[in-house]
Image 1: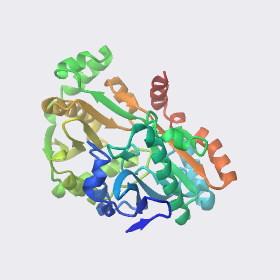
Image 2 (image 1 turned 135 degrees about the horizontal axis):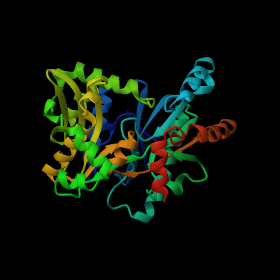
Image 3 (image 1 turned 60 degrees about the horizontal axis):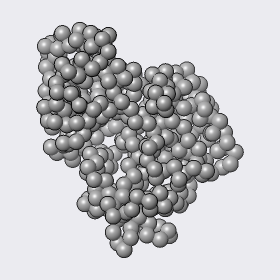
Length: 382
């Protein structure tokens, strides 16, 4: 469904199919999470989310775009530790206060809010264009009776967000993205660049690697029940549970990715002990989702085995950057990762609720409950 906003030149849609694939991707050159990725996510269905897409046209040409979504946001969803239990109890007793009608820019299945521009849009005009997209987003949120407005995972070094949001929205740190530059000749040189303790630990954990059979596939339809079970195990172990991916998501996304996607399978005997869905091209490798068996994973050191498998894959194909995503910040730091930070920008249309949320954000922010993430943010700030 496509709607034309009352804002001049703005297009608002409930499906990415309202935009031509080529025109959308032209605003996001080289992006692995492209038109086909978002369309596959729509087709799979993610319960509890309605997707939105915002575009700006000039004489009919799409010159800027950003995805979004609406959902009912429970405050305990992205909180860790004992506070999660407290907030969950409050949500049951006071649902109207603790469950927010949320509209957001960004995506529940992307680690960065993808803000794209056509190549001809001058750099110095892009903050103004961003502001027009935000106006369209706010207009759409009002039509959908959404009072809690969010920009999820806006890159801190993106020069376009801050001028458009400062003074209108508050912010708190989001989850950083981990990435590893593949600037070494082989795994031996990579290991030499790590600390002595980490190098020793990795080598020890790789000694039993022969007990694990690694298979790479582009089609995992026949293994979907096992993959779903591993995904649900991983999700149950995490306090940060924003979205729940349906089984069809894994096969639909892989089908849409074609030669730019695949799944590593980790077998112990005849048992599927882990999987790792990945996206890649000649420039970047994204470790998108990993699921490891709670017992066999630690026993066979599958985290380290999968990490080195990914490093080797990048080396074999000459891919210069390995993006390993959010969470697990301690191991990723020790394995040589660098980090890119995000802001979560937010505001509530109700002035009192907005003040309460600004105060609450000091307690709810992720780094207050994750010491490893706090260390990453402190290092990034220096």
